[in-house]
Length: 336
Image (cartoon, rainbow, N blue to C red; front, side, top):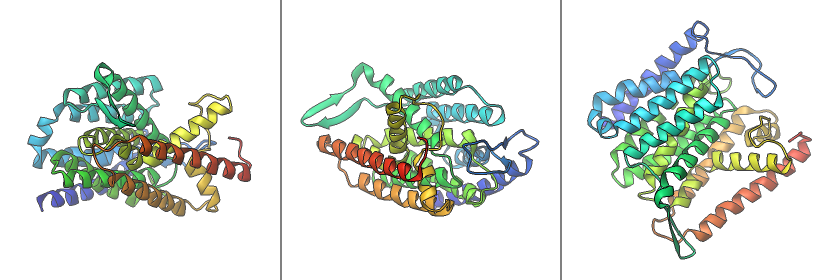
């Protein structure tokens, strides 16, 4: 019961702090100016990640100080990612700086034994990473943190998808009595609910990089933690929408001989929003339900099973999504 009361407290504090950030955003230099890729047309406060992160950082140590102390390096790592996101919200930070901080933060996770050192069994072959464990973990965390940042393109989308993913990790933590996983996932879900009051379409404030980078990093570390209980491929399903969106977009850019890191309006949420007659709410709800279906699929997979065919199934999902979105792009006459 105490845990759920803590979550209620985080929700209320997030509501208050995000409201404060919104009110003082102009004075703090936290205003999002729309560009050609934006779906909004007005100058809008950003940096709500400050509010919902602080709600968590202020409440959790009061009730779970021992747990936080036992994961001190991890909590410092999350703080570093939050700070670089905050700096980017205030005054754009270079991509190299953000990548460097995320890499350093991932190394800090290693000191708390949060690292991908084993990928599972594929067609009878066991894949252990050995000395390659830390580089692979850095690649995975940087990749997913960036993917979460890229999906933050519609009012309420990143928060909705994140809550579904975090809800899956809360179930894992509850099932296997992992207090840290329950604490972190539940806290961020509660804080995001407070944020959604302001971010649901039409949004009056955006989470900014202080929110999206922090969310991506936290989901990444919880995904790695859950590998103690779930097969690797299940994580791909649990976090499918950000992963598939990034893979499909980068594949399309590569085929078109464009930079895989170039910006455009060809992400899944842009295409589906046009399909739903520019209805942002329906688009977000559709993607939230879609992610929930993927996540429920991932939760059904059992540890120690051969993951070869499961990986093929996930890759086929990616190919089908690519073909489906390519057909929609052609129909919408987009330059993607």
